[in-house]
Amino acid sequence: MAERGHRNIREGRVLSNKMDKSISVAVERLVKHPIYGRYVRRTTKLMAHDEEQTCQVGDIVRVVETRPTSKRKRWRFVDVVQRAE
Image (cartoon, rainbow, N blue to C red; front, side, top):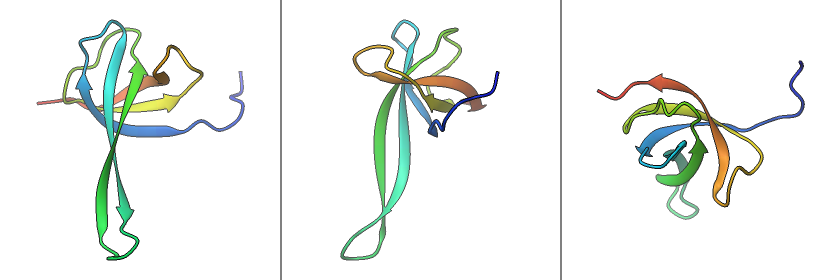
């Protein structure tokens, strides 16, 4: 089946996996400061759905935007980019 529309994809580090079928992911981005012109690191915390509970704390993972799963979960775990050491 062909995929419809465009879904945002983000990469981030797993902060927590203590919840049932859920992970907390920190996504970092660089934003240019409006006055000083220097790039500042900004962090966004996302809640993602992890059905098989495969993620460990410290893993770099890829998540995709999806319909709301719960009050705070709007992202779904896709795959592990890099395992934690």
